[in-house]
Figure 1: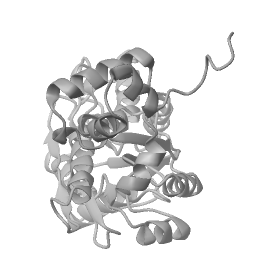
Figure 2: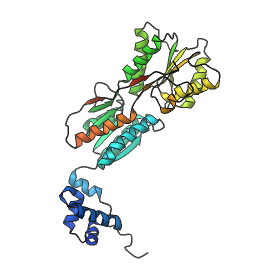
Figure 3: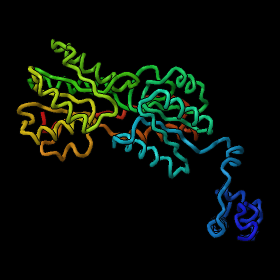
Amino acid sequence: MAQGENRKVTLKDVSKASGLSLITVSRALRQPETVHADTRAKIQRTIDEIGYIPNLTARSLVSQRSDMIGVVVPILASSLFADFAQGVSRVLEPMKQQMLLAVSDWSPSKEEEAVRTFIARQADAIIVTGFSHSEATAKLLNKFSGPVVEAWNLRDGAIDSAVGFDNYAASVEMTRYLIGRGYESIVMVGGASKNNDQAEDRTRGFVDAMRGAGRSVTDDTIVEFDNPATIEGGVALIQQLLARKDKPDAIFFLAELPAQGAMLWCLSNGVSVPGDVAISGFGDLSMSALLPVPMTTVQIRGRAIGERSAELVMDRLEGRTGTAAAHDIGYHLQIREST
């Protein structure tokens, strides 16, 4: 290979190959609206031909923007959070913004590491999941100069802006629905609420709704599964619950995958749903409506949460709005045959 064959292509090379001045080429990349469309097209053809890649670091020194948005999700195994990330990307991509995606596995230390990395990489904005952060992460986000969005829940005390829905209210409404259907022995199955404000609010909603209806809440009424919630976990849990002397006649799963697992086990083992036990979920993943007994659940619009989160940070970065806000995407009780 000849010496220099792998030399980095520069803006000067684009200028020389296109026959246009360096100033014109530079302006076309930095302020395209100031350059005639035919000239821009010629420059773009040249860039494609010779393989020029702009130096984004140098550009960010001039614009004071990195065009990168940091996003932290707890897991990607759930299609809800995958849809959320897709929603963020769907808004950012046409605006030539890059999403930096990190997965925390519900770990405060991993979330902190991700936030530190985003700040070190000069991210323009940061979107995190929920309100549960380590003390160090909360300090980092409070001191961060760009927009911050806490997504997936709505609570008082947001660091900056919040986009999501009222997890507490959704849980209250589903619990009251089950009580109203006449179920006497209702069990809630939820994720560990430590480091997860969504699970905490859903559990609190269940407890308050039960007690508000004069129902007792005991250690047997609330069952926690380890994160991440899985179909396999639901299969194991339903067998444990139905092996009890006092079997529940309704189970409210605070996550969708274990609810689906429980439903599949019941249908494969002669357990009637809802005749022997009613099952409801939380999330409304696509398979829930396609089960032999379509499942009652709380419908959440993960993609809409992602889209609105991205729109909000871009509005702030582009100066269209300068204020923090809370945006309620809402939820919907999707009543089906399983209850």
